[in-house]
Length: 343
Image (cartoon, rainbow, N blue to C red; front, side):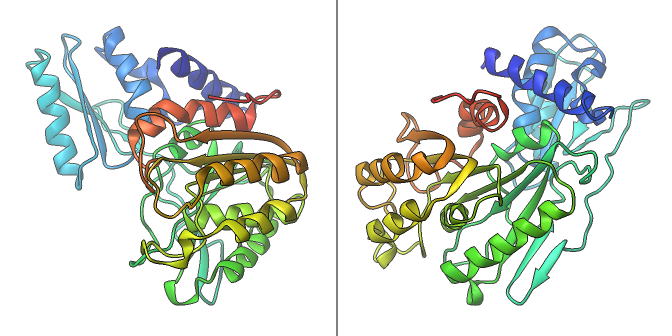
């Protein structure tokens, strides 16, 4: 993880210095008071790439502690202070919560994301995600449009996978492509996404990343039939419809064949991710073969993360473990002049 952390800190500096903008206070590791080298490394490598709610605490002697993965900020705060105390801290105080620095004398809250949808229509909306730092089209490095899955509950407003945090930390705004369940049919949603990506690019974001999980990933692959909509597509556990193990979604070979053959996006990089024991992916060897043989020749670059060790199931890419292991690689794939061919 140490090598990846050095890379991502470079992305922080490159992303903001190129725009003549000061990085948000929450990202400035150099401002941590009373921090030991270990505290700074933990803050940079773990806290900053964790999803909300999250809390980081410090003590005058260099002890530190963090808390995330809880349901409430109070639980994260309690965990961070307890972890700090367990390292010998006798005067542990909270340094940062969620997106804001709260330390006395250094307190700094970021500019909030717009509350209103940027684009909306019957059954869908493109909504700035308040759980992420917000810039704007003129100062952001780019935009991640994240598309949720479709299951047996309303997915609108749910937190994105933690790997998206790497892109936000590097200067990307994050917008959710939210769909109402009753209207969320695969081809209809794909057309909403095509139209939305075109409109968002026209507003000035320089680099557009279409990322998604499950049906959101499927829709993100569908838009590859139209050149110029996205510079990067990140498709994690793509599935056509539903989360019922008996659903026809488990037999998606012909539909994926159609998507791979329709690809015509010669300037778009595509990352395809799948996990072992995913009941909605069908023949996983066949899926990889189709993507390699029929899709990748018609895009700018391809990356496959295929059934990595230690990850399993349809939601294998959601957690902090996937973010910490593969987030930096996905960021490099999206932004390096010569994208890596593997992670």
